[in-house]
Amino acid sequence: TPAPIVSPTTTTTPGPSVAVETGTVSAPLTGTQDLNLGTGGASVLTLDAGTGSVTAKVVAAAAGEVEKVELTVDNGVKVQIPLESMGADQKVTVASQSASAVTAASAPPAGSTSASEGLAIAIVPAVQVDLAFEVPGMVRRRATTLYRMHWLDKLTNEWKAVCSAHKVDLAAKSVTAPVGTDIQENKAFNPSSGCHAKVTKCDGSGGTLMVFAVDEEPKECQPSSGSGLSGAAIAGIAVGAGGGALAIIGGAGY
Image (cartoon, rainbow, N blue to C red; front, side):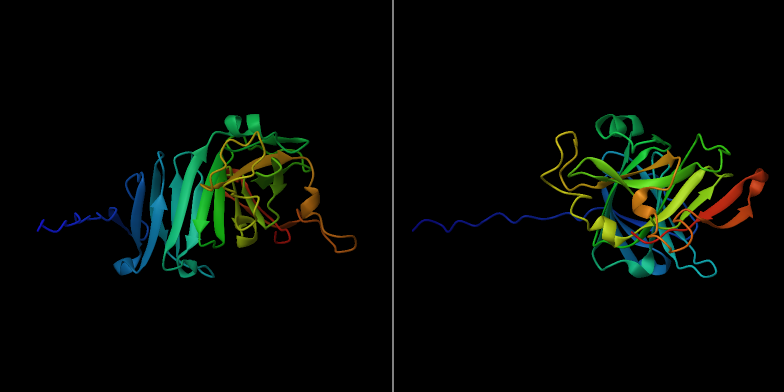
């Protein structure tokens, strides 16, 4: 009687785990790693940085705010995710994108110019995040010029404005805005098939966002007739360091 065939035992080695402390920036992270966040590593986030590098830190809750993990991509874009919003199997995939390469395939919105580098991001499950883009060429432009974050509709190869409240920091030369689950879960944000012929990344690995300088409020962010101030009405201005200003630009959620 032949000896029974015994299947080999397969051992799966878990990915490396990194403790990320409050206020302390981690060493550059590459590939896929589990991040143990906050005191005792109570929250776990699986980070996929691909071939790029990302640093991470936990930002303590300020007045009126919640504790967040902040990821800084190698092109300077910052991603902040509230720890209290994270699911048990929360995963985020991020990658820097060259503005010139992206806009060569996906032309900027009419009457606009690219102002930042690009970000590819996928968050599973989707949660609202704050994104902060560096805008190196930011200057005190004429009052009609706005900085507005956009996401790429990969099915039509058209840019659509993010109509949430924007913070434009002239001192830090940055634009920050929340990106909600409605955008992330839009079928055109991060499809794995059916993309426009000019869109080169159509594998579900992340939707694309950038900041553009525009001369007027995008139509999709303009309120209906008689609703009052436009989506880009300045809600408040605070003088920043070095004479800069922080403009808080309000808008309807999108």
